[in-house]
Picture 1 (spheres, rainbow, N blue to C red):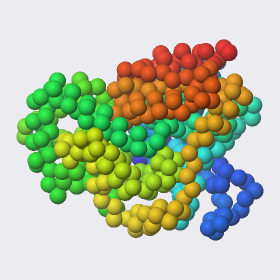
Picture 2 (picture 1 turned 120 degrees about the vertical axis):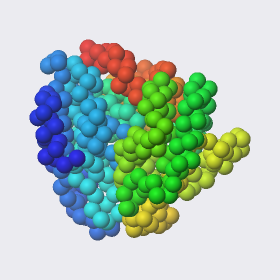
Picture 3 (picture 1 turned 180 degrees about the vertical axis):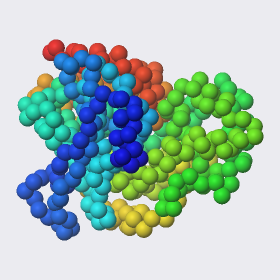
Picture 4 (picture 1 turned 90 degrees about the vertical axis):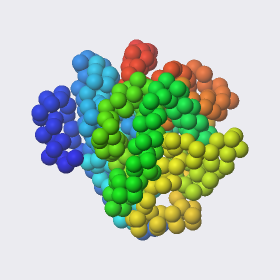
Length: 425
């Protein structure tokens, strides 16, 4: 969406919002001028939007959306995903650096290391100080990858937070995450087809009719043919079975494939367009510096040991990632940089995080949904085990519920309860 289209949509919808740009620094450091690769510090424009709340006295909330590599304006704004979220509160949304209306990396791939969660948190601090004041405190909320950013923010700037809330992300080994994403997905698909057996016939028929000429994506990164079917994997983490069934019922016999492609094209393109930025941020922040090939190989080996072969399944997130065709020179160069270990990892330091929560009297709520195949509950449980040794039960709370990856939006009363407790502490 062009910025002119964005402004026109705001005008037509009559949203009660303010938006603008703040200036930030590539290095999150005003004094440093150049790095070891010859990259020069430069100013970055970071786009933000404030959705005004019904309660003028309510605290501000900074909202970190999922991704990585997907902007607020590219997903949540496009689908009104922001307008009815916690309506009593003032919510600040931002296009994380590298996405949406915020500035992008240059052509030098070594610059991408400055677009990870550490630097997104620095931008958020610049927003807080510019829009509120130096001594202000706000609620830090994140969903999916945004939950990782919440932890990084509290590790770095917990003195600026009233509390943190993460939904749909767990700090765990990448192997735990990947293996259980597939296992939960496969279990959900089995349950779904037991409940709606006719829908399985629909999907099989669609897959049979997907040919190499069917393509989603762009000239640099795309999926084609039967590989497109795997985009639907994400629906099982995002929607209830009933919602999925309603979607499938809308596919008629004559235009079944066309309607399926129309249904998944937006989500598929969102995934494909996150591209190099997604790969670098994941490599540095989330997967312990493993390459995609290394992670997929280990995951498949472990699944096979458990008697699970992804090629026997109708939908698979690992297979989706493996079958993306990347013709971009950047991706070829990026693989070489990964192989040479050019990017240092920057995981959450749980010991520092726990100490900061205690020092600044800040609560972190981590919410895991048992029906979420995009962040399996095993990931949250592993994080819970990791932090037990730091004796922070009063500051690091884990909540397990029965929802899915979208429960952050559907169960807002739970979130409101946490915020009210922080507001009056």
